[in-house]
Image 1 (cartoon, helix red, strand yellow):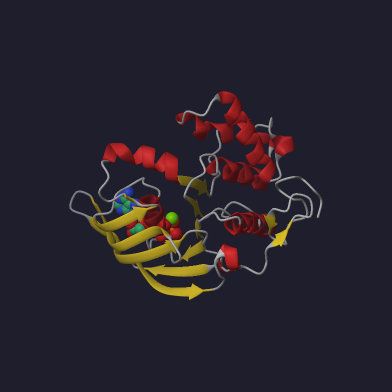
Image 2 (cartoon, protein in one colour):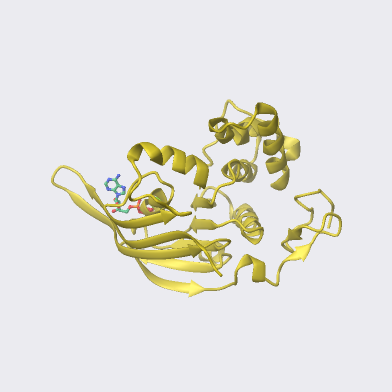
Length: 262
Ligand SMILES: Nc1ncnc2c1ncn2[C@@H]1O[C@H](COP(=O)(O)OP(=O)(O)OP(=O)(O)O)[C@@H](O)[C@H]1O
Ligand SMILES: [Mg+2]
């Protein structure tokens, strides 16, 4: 049976200022099953970032329900939002948002510092995550010494640090050339094949088409949904590493788990 990690019911978000009112979302319904890779497209100002802010527990809806991995964000206390966010959400931003004074490894470790994971464990996990995005050798590099694509891969490793229920990516390829951007979206797709739930906002249709489903937003509502693939577990494009037997996407030339060349 499928399980929804995200459930939005009749959601609206209105930004009120002095004498102004912007209806960013209105009557929005959305469900995302665990393990799906969902792309969100739509014109500037249609509410894409607003939607991610609600899903990322950065903000609460004006009306309606936002349920994330069983937690109703609409009913949560403001003070509880940071904890929900830290435990359930991994963010990937257009501008990477890495801390320039920290190494790649320290950037990935940072979100784990909120929890009770001992320092040694954190370091081990951060290294494994960097390895999984093909950057074990750059662990000690500061972001300024990394290419844009490498910085985004560190940011993806960081987003995975707390094993979140969902990864939210807002224009993750916006600052990358198209070849590097495609590699990043393929990496996100590979993570979804491994069972991660991913919601990506993009203006690029080619990138969006790598998702399982594409949702088109206009005036704060889902206008159209195009279905593409199947659930990760049902996919035909999964192969197994001959060394460690883990599931892999056929795009890989090196197994992200054991490092075997494929
Ligand atoms: N904090 C805010 N206060 C007031 N209005 C806001 C605020 N944030 C967003 N808006 C407005 O809400 C609407 C939706 O904004 P949002 O940032 O969600 O759009 P978007 O689809 O992400 O656009 P883009 O593609 O340009 O990033 C816009 O009209 C925007 O001006
Ligand atoms: Mg936006």
